[in-house]
Length: 464
Ligand SMILES: [Zn+2]
Image 1: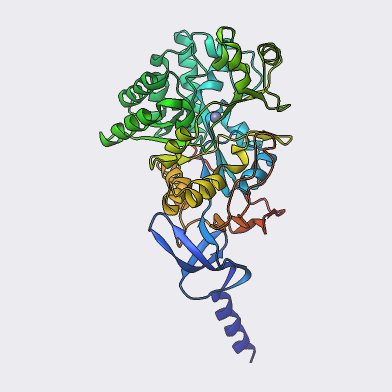
Image 2 (image 1 turned 45 degrees about the horizontal axis):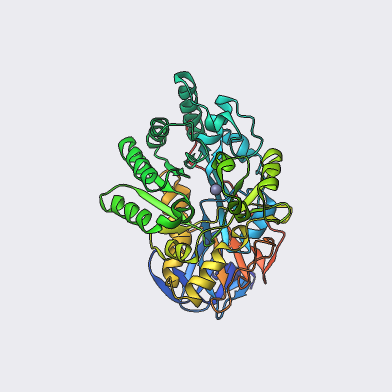
């Protein structure tokens, strides 16, 4: 009798999953699967994708809901609990800070040890390396003086190269650049740093400068350095030149160059008011100041209040792009979706909290600009592919298949929508009832749980 019970228990456990997501419309952009399936999860991985019902200790009824790979955000500056808590309710399960990155890769990861809401990773950054080497006075992410505007001599250049090399050896997943924030760095310096990225098999993620001509130069520098290139937020870097930007990126890809890009679905940008982007503010006509909205207070600026804010520092939202420009960027099959988000003490840009739901609600459901499968591909599979050559762990993300990590976003395609606004960026998106990270629900019925299964994602650390 005892033997029989043990046998029975053994058979049951072989068929009982930790978590089962039942009856959902499972969409996997890699294989093109779009059908009702049961997903069985065990030990943080997907163990079954089945057309017939499965049994689990925890069961999630996903009838009427889409079960998609968790979204992978390649551009997220808010790398703390508050930002993670907003973006996870927008469907993000892995968040990377790749544009600015860090100059101290081990310290960046150590600061997040012990479990976060979502998975996280970082690049080693040319901007912070340059700030350190040139002695920039800025206390934020971006240069506020010589680190941006100064020029580097040969020994300083060599120092930056070795910092980037060290960061890659310590597991950084990419190399970050912001030539728009470092006008003192000639393209020859950028190309030299691209070579370090190329040698490490890392993609170079750049907030570029200089419009169409700047894009041509950036693509040319990456080509001669042999570096994989990722143009961040093509919508805001291109502004009115979005058609030409997408054409040039498409042409480079046609010619066999590894160039990718990303966009966020908002007409306003956000950055630090002390950055080099505003160095020419004294030459602006009066009406231009009103396009700028101070994040700390929500007020629109004037010449007088702009000058005051520039002296004290802070973050500013910049209004100005047309809906037509935003729509073209989001509709392009070339553009991955990435938020460029950041939020702190409830204040920030709504893109932190609403980027993915806005694409799914507005551009997929309401305006039919993007097929659902293609949107999900650009939110999950393509960002995973961007990183997986250097960071093999990414080959297990962005897919719903046996053996993949159980990072899943479960949403209602009929109601999913962003709700965050420029006045209140802390309103979570609607219509995303469940988000799973490493097999553990981090969002249940739209609310955060206490689980902190998010782990570091890094490239293999070089042994020396
Ligand atoms: Zn950014």
